Length: 159
Image (cartoon, rainbow, N blue to C red):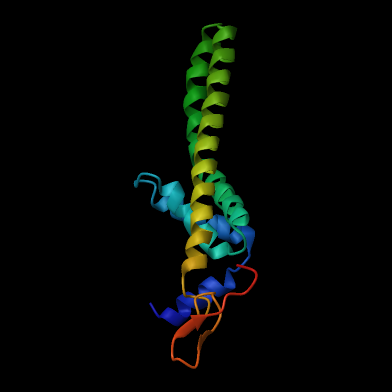
């Protein structure tokens, strides 16, 4: 793959919140066999998002929630099968219990994937800040050389 085409892909995704969240969610689903793939997917979405670390955490959390949709579907399917048995047996309390378990399980999954995705998004922005992809100066301004020949780095007030 050509480096220039990869840079242009990243440049085209700059600040596009929903596309970056979707790209991170795809990474999470594809790498779901790896422990903490949600952190990796969140990092990808945060890296593509740019902006502040808070914005990276937000896009990472949304990315995790998008990736959790298939998990939600499986949980609802499994718990609805069990609750169907309770309905067929005339157990109204069983249906209420299984609905409660389903809602609790969905809340736990949502908190986990959103939280780890947010951590990944935060780390993705931090990685982006430290990388030298943006310019030749690594986001620290141009290097100057004083009369003694020692290199000095100018840092702008934003950092």
